[in-house]
Image (cartoon, rainbow over all chains, first blue to last red; front, side):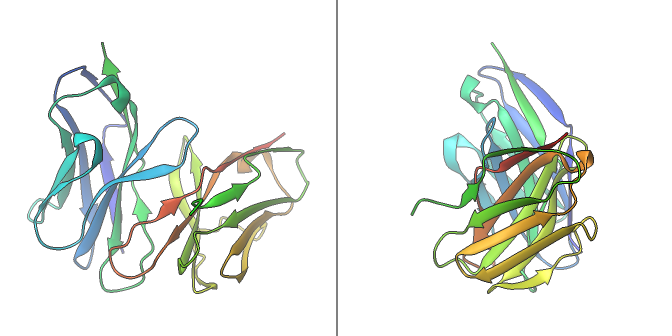
Length: 114
Length: 114
């Protein structure tokens, strides 16, 4: 079975500072991994995904994430935070060999300080 | 494509009443997911369909919840009878299926049971 743990339900960073949102996964088979963003009163929108190949994945809005198998991690980063990045971020995992249901972490709310 | 369409966007109902949430997935997508989002539990997968067939309903909380997908372009999630603890945002998502494909989310239905 797959599961995702996101460290920190709330993270605050200053505008212009580095954003780091942590995600660790558990999977009995090689995983596919996703980061989604949710703005208030909206559905979830895909930021980026890792399937195979390059372990550093670039997404929309300047975000990127690195798949580290040895650490079972898929942390999300952005070099310089912008006020518009304030939202809730979800890490998700799915299995590669079986059905493609997607399991989400509990989310991390990102606050940007002026 | 208009994306995943959910209706209604908001629903307020009295305890004991039947509630039906509706979803139209993206045309051509083979997988459909129903999720429930609450502050306490985060984003929970309730049920997952593939090619209109329920594959995994282990997340359905109890017999009061039921979901159907009579055809590839329509799904419903029904709660009968509804209870205050069912208050949440319910999301429908669809996916093209296949390994590593992401889910596309609707805007959600905010359900309040009073």
